[in-house]
Length: 237
Image (cartoon, rainbow, N blue to C red):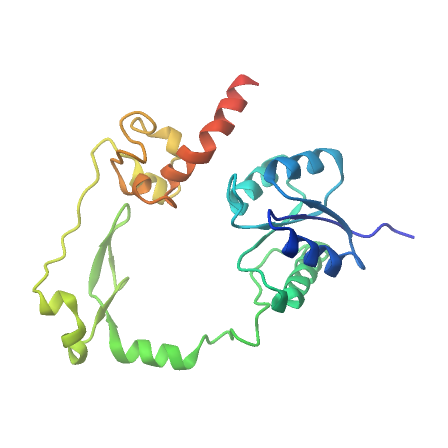
């Protein structure tokens, strides 16, 4: 009799961790971990085929840890759980089933598990309301990408009374990053934070020089907070 697939459930909150364990243990071999450090230990010790991790972990985000899993254990199926509650256990199970079917059939594609709420045509009522209130701008300048025609929205003249640009005569002007800042290249996926000469020296979350360091979710801010320690470990090794 073949062994069941193995799943590692990573969540720092015990209740959802246990709920997932009970849901999965009839069909899977289940390991649990309450921290990313504990999860690494399990991954090194056991043959884990699927990792389920909460996005909001205290050490690093779930997505960040799954990047590490992808590099070290590339054959492991990786799933991030966000906003998990008791009511969507069947959605989690169905998503796992769909992922396993893709693996078994040699497919790699985007599938919609949440069909009862999200259809291929989207939410028609919301789209109709969006079309009623907004229209496409002729062009818009995006940081790191330059001007792209018809890539942003504006409020239609019918609703100008609700448009801050119209009411306060605001003239939108893009602000260029520091000439030495590589944020534009990072937004295009051409460079990593360490490829910028300003990163971690004159550019830090306390004194950001570019947009990628301003937001806590920016590529540079996230790497400054979490990735530097991983880089240091790799250099020491």
